[in-house]
Image (cartoon, rainbow, N blue to C red; front, side):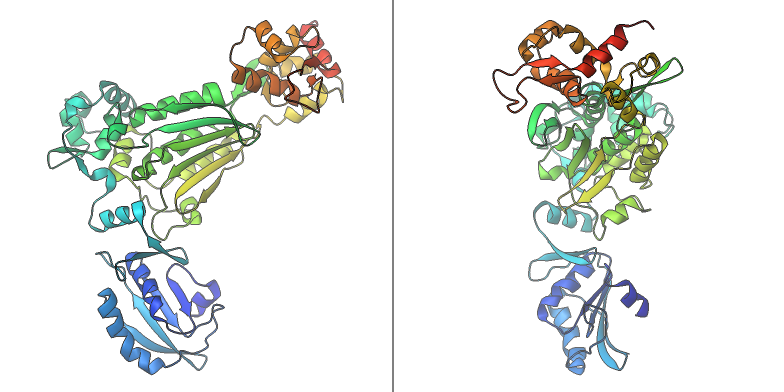
Length: 485
């Protein structure tokens, strides 16, 4: 008791000053989670105030709990600082427990009523079933994608996690060995993992990527469809080739490219989203990229009684979709030891990138990185480019391609064609570019942010008469590129 009071209420302990019948919902929540204790006669601050009519409660509550919840629980009297308290201990229940048709669960130090997809998932798990393990009629192995099997085998070949001969077996045998059938039918997991168009059965089984300017304006976007292995590979490829700009640095004469989010960390975060997503939600995985951040959101609550702190700390593996997780484990892409976020943090520390923030609102999980340059000398380069100190040949040689944290190849090309004040259309024509969004993100905005070009009408950035001209800093920077090496 003393330890509990010092620590405050937890997911296993709830205090109430007096009894109300509505607290049967709290007992229901304990039974549907990890169990717990409700103590009557304690204030919210953990001070004993005494339970009114304690003797009557000891007689009435066992019967009321049995008749309403179907639970037989110990109800006993304890004394603390001379005050009589009533303590109700609830064990976790294997079958689901309802309160007048409502299902409640203890999550952290709060009680939540389950509805919709969360209730469906809860009931499936209580009966030893999972959403991804449910069978789907009228589809066979012949309907699955040869390309998906090829991708799976390519990943699994070096993992040494498949029984001998599995990768050379027929597709039907491989599906059986992966435990992806039920009563002779393919499970939902099999369709998500190996069908070219799983959206025929699972709405929202795809990935949405968007590039945003100014927090709200969508510059461009992509959709990634197909089996989960294709979604993983193509999403990572798009993020590295289209959405994220690598910072260029030099070690001696060796050129190095460093992405704002470490490759291993990004892959782990995407795998977490694909594996733990609540596919019954109908929502795609959403990846939002801005000039200073990247976030990944996937629908689905944390396991019962889990908090974000549980997720980030040491914990056992509790995949939302165990059949999908098991198949990814066979590829060697995940460990299945609950170390996903630990591996993300390790990858960030190795590169010198700040660890991401993680949020959960009960409907889904969002992981977000700040856009940071781990090369560490972007500010020094910006200062030199803007003329606060002299731009030297040494800087141009060592950081060729890096201006204020951006790849300078595009910026250098832009400066080279700016012979006078020019509207953006003429600038694009001079560069041979047709994509307006690509020109803005890769050329125009970086040059403006670095102070190398400027607007002729800065007070009206969207004016139809707007033009751009090279600044003194831009001319100085361009001269260092054209000068002797």
